[in-house]
Structure formats: C-alpha cells, structure tokens
Image (cartoon, rainbow, N blue to C red; front, side, top):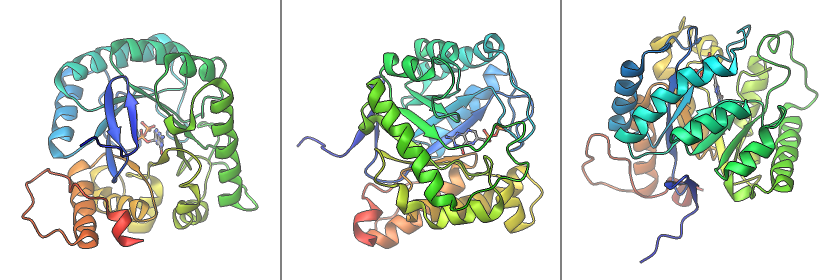
Length: 301
Ligand code: HH2
C-alpha cells in the first residue's frame, strides 16, 4: 500500500508530516546562546549529528550564523567554509534530511550542492535574491517571523495583537513563496519565538499556535533553551534548560507544531513519545529511540 501522508521531499530525503518531527540543532557558531557552539569542528559536529539521529532526530538543522540577540553578522564566505564540510560529512553518514539555517543565497546554493535538502531562513526569504534562489533550488523552505533584526530585535518589541500580526506576516510570506513558484505544500511557517518578542508575546504565540496550522504544509517551532525557558524555570542556560525545553516542545506539538527544532533530542523525543502513546492508546514496549508510528493529533483532537 502507498503511503499518502503529507511529506516534504528534501532533495530526495522524505520528511513525513503525519506526526510530530524532531529537528536536531547543529550550531557551527562561536557564540550560540544555547551553549552548544561547535565552531569549525567538523568531527564534533558529525558526532553530535549522529548521536541526535540515534536519539530520534528526524532531521538536522545546520547553521553558522548566530541569531542570538546582539549577535554580529558573519560573512557569506566564512559561513560556507563552516557549513559545507559538515553537511558533506553528514550526508554520507545519516539518512535524515539536512536543513541549512541561512538567509544568504550563496550559502543556500553551497549547502544544497553539499547535500542539504531544506532551507530554514529566519528572515523568511526577504533578503535580496533569497526568494528566487530558494525557488530555483526546488527544496522545501521554512519561513520565520522576526520583528527587526538580531542585533536590535529585543529592544522593546511592540505589537497590538501579536498572534494576528505574526499570522498576517507569515500568510504574506507564504503568498510571496507561491508567487515565486514555491508551492505552499513545500512551505513550513514559524512564528519565531524570541525573535523580537517579549515573554508575553512568546506565551501568546504558544497558546495560539494552532492558528498557524492551516497557513502552509506545517508549523516549525524553535523554543529550545531560549531565554523564555530560562525566565520560566530560573535556569541560567545551556543544557540546564533541557527539561523546560522538552516541556515547551511538547506543548507546541500538542497545539499543532509539526516540527520542533531542539538541542536536547532524547528528552524531547521521550516527552512526545509519552503523549503520543497516551493519545493513541499504544501499549507496546518501546524501543529506545523509536518514535511512535501513529499520529497523536487524530486521536487527541
Ligand atoms: N532559532 C534560532 C536559530 N534558527 N530557525 C527557526 N526556523 N526557528 C527558530 O526559532 C530558530 C531558528 C536560534 O537558536 P540557536 O540556533 O540555538 O541559537 P543561535 O542562533 O544563537 O546559534
């Protein structure tokens, strides 16, 4: 029997969207806020990527430009020099789709040539040439909302109605994608937690996440280890925020997120596995990293 569930074709690697998916983060930055910066260490990145897949990651997101509030931009040449060796190494060792976290057309091209199959752009393909390049490369894209830009985005962000405004922005970006030739079935939308948002804004977006479900192929969410988790738990940073992050990821998938971008794959996978199995009534003894096969959404709505 053919599997007709919705899926993203990431340059030949399928990401099915029939149940919650976990995206492991590989930050090739010098200064990620999440405390997991791998700099230019290809071997460490490969090892971490393999470990994440073993723990249950359904895809890996590789990036070299820190988007931490106040972070300085990186030159395209340096970004390519960091991401390409890691994507090349990963694509020979893992079968899951690899996404490139960038907003620069040159980096998109180089990453795709090395084996990446999805473009994750925190600028929602608004930078010069990005939309046309993504359309030409014919891979799925993730478009994220951000108010301002990383250097200044946390200087008093203001909204009248954060859910409505972020929804309108993402609807416009999906429309722009379609106008450029990117079918919305190949687009994921992301409200951009922490990108020009206060804690109240982030909480309102998380509570209202199901509003974003019908905009495109699915909702992508990055809450992992962000400062809102620190504020809610009192944890200073890094891996100390793993449990709070797994709880937030679970809340996001319960509200319809299709992909959660996380640093702590094992904890997230376990949290989602427990909910899925409660929702579906599946009583089989689980294999360690096996993700439950049935969709929790159908049974729990
Ligand atoms: N968050 C970060 C980076 N890329 N992409 C999407 N689509 N959504 C997100 O929420 C998102 C993202 C920031 O997290 P991280 O990569 O851990 O930190 P840094 O940018 O400091 O390396």
